[in-house]
Image 1: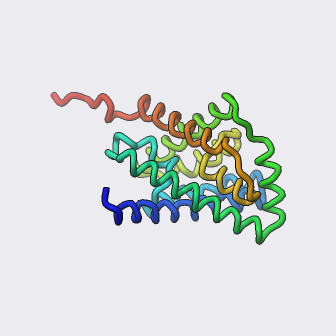
Image 2: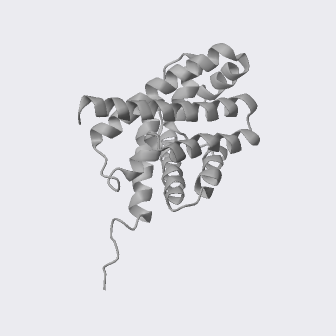
Image 3: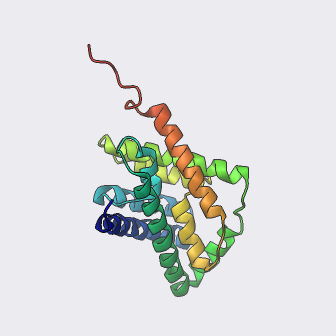
Length: 199
């Protein structure tokens, strides 16, 4: 992939981080039950504007013929842009900083955390797949679902981490879980793996 294409992929990924960041900000600011509902604005915007969000792309790695280098570029750009955006949020709003600090304290590098990340990946794949079929309900219901269930979204997590100006390797574990869960959902639910034979 040419350098200018990497730049375009990264730019669209940074845009996706901006939208997810706005959703995460309102979630940290007002909490439940309204916060998770408004967070859906982020993923809906990503899909409508066709931006590059790692958790929305990894389940379509094979279906969309994505290159691994593209997916890695998306992840890195999401993480960097998300962290920087979170840092800005932390500087302008002490309430958001306090909420983020409390949230980060509950993360760990464990099998349970990985499984919660994988389950978020499942929901993210299904939400985007349903959107691609013409309905926003997958997003409008799926996003609150993973938040209320306590599942872990790597890009939202790195934004929250940026608010605290801290570092936590659980973000990478979360990204791996999101990836595995999304691909598992694709394997179970996508008709493109074993398409129906024409008569």
